[in-house]
Image 1 (cartoon, rainbow, N blue to C red):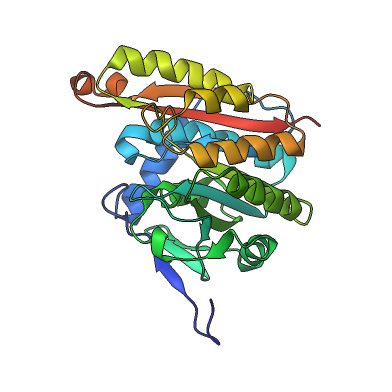
Image 2 (spheres, helix red, strand yellow):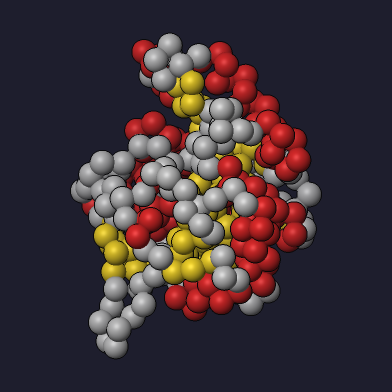
Length: 287
C-alpha cells in the first residue's frame, strides 16, 4: 500500500493495445460510443452492471450502452462514490479475490483514483479477499472498464478486483463484503465479461440470447447449470454471478438488457473463424 508520502500509481498496461494510447483518440472514441448508445430511461438506482472487455474496436459499442445508462442514471439518482470493477484472470486461476492496491491507475486519460478505504474494507471482511497486484499486471478484464468510468462517472473512485476461482465460498464472501460496503457508501458494481466464443456465428447468437435473458432475469441457478469449462457462456462467470447476487441482495428484481452484438456482426469475415459475443445489462433497484 502507500508508503509514507509516496503514491503508488499503477499503469494501465493495455494502453495502445486494447484501447488507444493517445489521450485525444481515447477520449474521442469513448465519447463516440457513449453518444451513439440509445438507452431507455431507467427507473430506480442502478447498483450493478455488465460490460464486455474486448478491444474497444470490437466491444466498445456495447460498453457504451452500459456506461451511457450509468451516466444518465447518475444524473437522476446521484453519482456513485465508488465503482467496484470485478474482473478475472485470463492467464489462469488464483485463490480467492485479488484486489489492486495503491492510490491510482493511470490511463491515457489521466490517473483514476483508487478508493483505498473501500478496498481495505473488502479485504478486512474475509480472508478470501486480499491485496495482490500481481494478477492485475497485464490483465485487461477489469482495466478495460477504467477509461469508460473516467469519462462517464468522472467523480467516482475505483476498486479493481479479480475473482480467481469458482468456489461458491469465494462468491459468497465477496457478495457479503460488497453488501456491507454498500451500507456505508454509494457503490456501483460492474462485472466484466464477454459471452460465448465460438467459430459458429449462429450458435454464438442463439446461445448469447439465452444468456442475456437469464442474466437480466437474475436466473442464477439456470445460468450456473448452463456454464461449464467446455461451454463458457460467460468467460467471466465469477464476476457475473457476484454482481447478480449483489443486485438481488440490494433489492433488484429484474435487470435491463440494453444491447447485444457479437464480433460477427461488425466483422462478418470472423464468422467461421472466431466469433465473440458482447452484452450490456444493468441492474436497477426501484425507487
